[in-house]
Amino acid sequence: MTFQPPSPRIKMEARELTLRYGTKVAINKVSIAIPERQVTALIGPSGCGKSTFLRSLNRMNDLITSSNHTGTILLDGASIHDSHMDVVDLRRRVGMVFQKSNPFPKSIFENVAYGLRVGGMKDRAELSTRVEKSLRSAALWDEVKDRLDESALGLSGGQQQRLCIARALAVEPEVLLMDEPASALDPIATAKIEELIHELKATYTIAIVTHNMQQAARVSDRTAFFYMGELVECGPTEQIFTNPREKRTEDYVTGKFG
Image 1 (tube, helix red, strand yellow):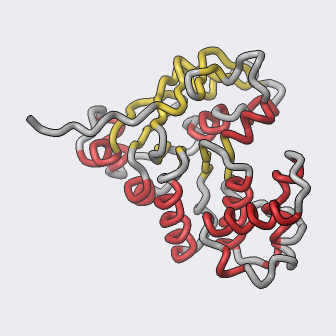
Image 2 (cartoon, rainbow, N blue to C red):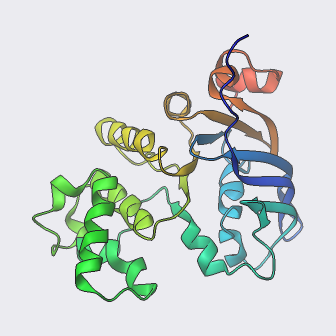
């Protein structure tokens, strides 16, 4: 009898999620499970709905007045649109790192401490401990530990992106959403981000949007292929890239279109 490892617990799940901007359907009836402590990559051509889907997972689309949705998104089995769900708390639990690094025009220390201060943490020693822990988690501590009072805007692009990851980690989220976190970076900085993602999944559930097929193949456990607002196929990354069930998936991953 072959040993089957236990199936990972489902951390987040979308069921029949449709999201519109006004009357325009951005994603249509998407159902997908995001397993705990794994990396789920969302791939597909530009405008296919993958970033819209990612932003629905912590209700960032709520900030767009014309957006409306049907269907359900669950976090630990509870609907994130439930009237009891505090959106601020949701965004603490489900953190976000954007395509373009967006450090605040503050010191490196204050960038990482920002969310903690907003959450009411005042004790300097406690802040210092958490800032160091977050910078270590983002593989940035050794590069910045002697310049924490300097402006974050003086860091390189790759360092700024890792700083934004540290800022997201400081509030101790459970899920980390990454929207093309390495698309603006050079190959060396990209490799550092990919290595970091690999390390972070021991602690966090990660969903990443990427245009880079090789990156999806390198960093993810599962891959979901979006096309024209629909989820075409989702499965173990190796299967999606070597033996997809759908012709459209095969055409996309082999570069026949997209």
